[in-house]
Image (cartoon, rainbow, N blue to C red; front, side, top):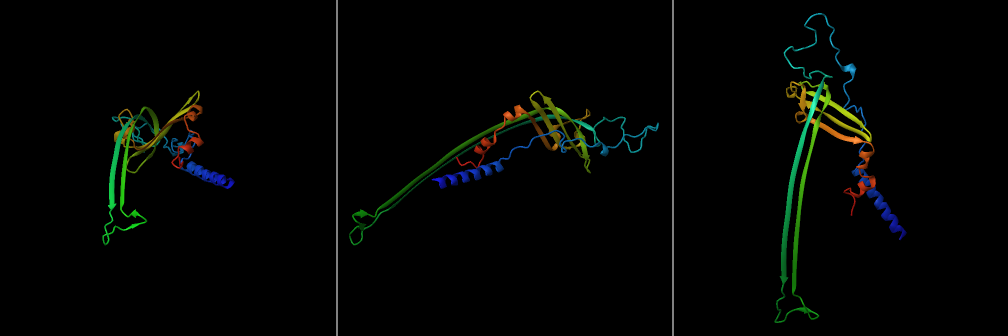
Length: 230
């Protein structure tokens, strides 16, 4: 009995470790992530020194154009207008029935048998399956955040990134975004909608005791993992 228990414990430990690797714990989110940090000042172009002329070398300024983000380090406001909803329904039903019978004929007027048992054979099988599933999911995100232009691609596309942190009494709340923006999608008010941001990575979450209270512990994550056999 002792060997059986040891083997069971070893199998359970291997399954637990496999479940942990299949459902890894999320790393802690901290401010000033390099992927969302603003551009360092050493990479920014210094403003030109006034020489008393309307024209400044290597500096463009439109008298009749709106002041939109066009250079690395410029600020742009992103308005979130994310709304999604998906529905899916599936239903499957199968049914199969089969019947087979082998009847023994007579041989020289005698029905063959074995120890008074007939060789007549009859087989039948019925099989059926029915399954259905429904899914309905919706989400939305509204608000706005000001971010900076981190890079200008050769085709003129702007790469933006930024984050906002709010420190509350029971933890911190953050929102992050990065992606690509076309200059023509920026409004005269220097605003772009999140639906116009290509290759967008948007994150919204929090840290602290309240946020930890909504997360599953490692034991529950193992029990809910696909590796758990029961």
